[in-house]
Amino acid sequence: LARQRYKEQFGAESECDTRWCLTVPAMWSERAKDTMTRCAKAVGMQDVTIVLEPEAASLCVQNQPGAEVQSGDVVLVLDCGGGTVDLVTHDVQEGGVVKELAAGSGDCCGGSYVDAAFMKHMERKYGAVYTDWIDRKPKDVLRLRKEWLKTKVIFGTGGSTKQALVAIPQSLATALEDAELMDEDDDGELEVSEGEMKAIFDPIVDRILELTEAQYRASARPPTKLLLVGGFAGSPYLQMRVKAAFEGRVKAVVVPPTPGAAVVKGAVIYGLMRNSTKAAKALSQLNSAALLYKTVLFLTSPLLCLLLLCCLQIVLSGPVFVCMGLAGAAYLLK
Picture (cartoon, rainbow, N blue to C red):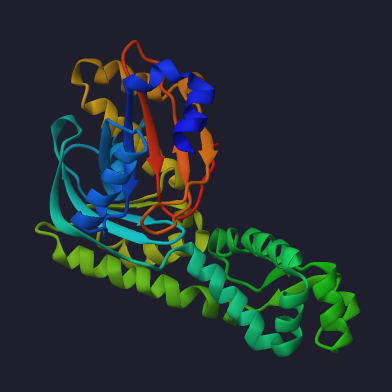
């Protein structure tokens, strides 16, 4: 699917000059990474490089205008995606070179697990009325998930964790009203209390903080900065909790403007750095929106049925670099 879409957009003749940078979670084993490489080559992706997602994110932030991560920093990278959370600690050296100070770690505790916790909350609170509705209205279940995401991404904004409102499909509102579990005056919105919202978020966020603490302690040198990236890193509540736990222990908690795009941008930079004679020009071009193209595809991984294929074309006089992010959820570049 990736090669087909690429040929349609850029032409078959350009594929021979394509370098594929496949990003994978830091927690993946060498065997898993080798399998990914062999599968990619089996479908025609010949020049394949495996890039760890936290390393790619670090490279992205280092090469942004006004970079908050610079040479001499010891950076703990916390990459919170949809499915996995990956961590690694780097000593940032001259020329963008990084030295690993603590082995990569991670767990399956990304943003999608918060979504699952919300659905479980609904089941516990509304019981058979809700489960029966799920069986009868699968399309409306998808609408409920989308509305929850709108609430999820603003919870904690401005440091506030007050109650939240979730718009629900009319079919669910009717079912709850008929069972006298919801008032008609609620206008199709469910109120989720502050305590309920924290009960949904906190088990996942607490696990993320546990992993971050373990990574911090495992580093050969104390981290000076914490880099928070990934799709779930855009959550104000997660940012608030991470900053509360580590702001007094590191010089800065850095969250880039588009944290969900940091991995895919960094993977492009990683590919460009292999071509050192053009790296300076390429990095300059990477920051030009006119030269940055995006296509989001859905790819079923041979390993874990992960979703996400982000294709970026950088217009250069040399090779074209295509970066694939396989992290469990698609994040659209702004």
